[in-house]
Length: 102
Image (cartoon, rainbow, N blue to C red; front, side, top):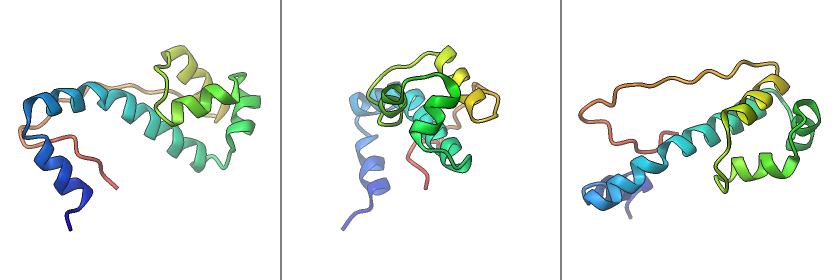
C-alpha cells in the first residue's frame, strides 16, 4: 500500500496535476495555519468568531478550504487569537514538491 505522500509524489510527475497542486498551495497553507493557530490558542470556531467579529460559518469555510478569503479577514482572525498575521514569499527549492507535511 502506498502512503499519501508517495501517491502525491507520483501524481506530481504529471505537469497538469503539478500546476493544479501549486495553484492551490497558498489556500492550503492559509487554511492549515488558521486551524493550527486556533487550536494552539485553545479556541473553538464559535469563540474565535465572537472575538474576531467574523461569522463562524466563514471560519468553517476557510478551515475546509471551501472559500477564498481576504487578507483583511485573516488579519481579523489573527487579532481575535491575539496574534499578528504574517505573510511571506519563499523560494521553492528544486527538489521541493509541496507535498503535505505532517
